[in-house]
Image (cartoon, rainbow, N blue to C red; front, side, top):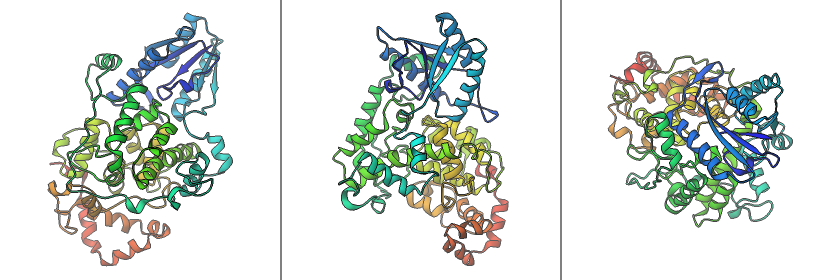
Length: 488
């Protein structure tokens, strides 16, 4: 029997006992996502190529045959391989990206006409609990804190006993989220490009910064992070610096999402480390809680979220989102965040949420266009994590199913948590002049126009502040502001 292995199933756990052949297809054709083509970044394609080929090379055994093929079309590659090797049965672990699963359902129907059966194996590997178990425990997505405590208890992570957390506290938020103006760039991690990474670069005729494309390389990255950055991660997790794209973030998300590493082994390595408890708890929470919750939230609402646009925002993304004349962008925070994406196909959560997402929401960009942009731009972008984070958490297009309020801020937050503002042509302290930071007047204009939303989300104290704001001036500044003015 033949098994198809996908780009986010690169771990031996996914291999079924009954198969004799494994096929990995590196897809180079068009990827259609909700009726439009996804133009993935080249680095993601290189990681797909090198990751798949490394996995096959390392997993070959005398009894199991592996093959790696390059094709513009999944069906053609699979059908040709079956015909060549006389296979009539194929298995695949059900894709956890919905648009990929739908594509394979179509392939299943086409293969039927050729007397080839494609069987889907339930995915009980990718996440710590299956979606069926989630639904059994929670008929609908619960308050996220309840889910977090359930997961801590179930897996006995940072627990004194079956019911009580270590330190008698479930979280240590009040001890996190600082900004150190004296921070010095400290990441000094490098890998040699392995044979298949170089082969992938040659195939795509470009060179990119190296990321792990094997399990061994990913373990090396995990160990480096724990030794050199974990102790300081908690303090500066929300901080942003012009000359430090990574600060103390782990950069493990791509390795986790491609499954070079398992979520539980990362959690366990952090748990047994010697880092302070508040640091341990916060890092583990991102995987045990947020990563898991995003997947189950997506599975629950995946048929609705692409149809929703709560605020009715419809502005198309401007050219600087396509890297045109990025050096001329005047808003320094936006320029720095986008340059990080161009260079690294990466950005930590605050850059994504409070710079790019914040600006997009305040300026009324179409949330679905922004969602597509995130898909195309980041190496750790997979549907189950991108869509709920962008459409729900960042853009509030689901009307509050995920987030209790729109995540927006004025320039004050950005100034507090970054060094961007000191190098910006706009004045962070101004609200009412053309030279004011655009975040300041866009923020108050958004609150005024969506007053009821904030009142319903228990943010009435914010709307009361409108009494002290000169809204006539704010509205004029907003009306005069055009994203093209971000550039000169």
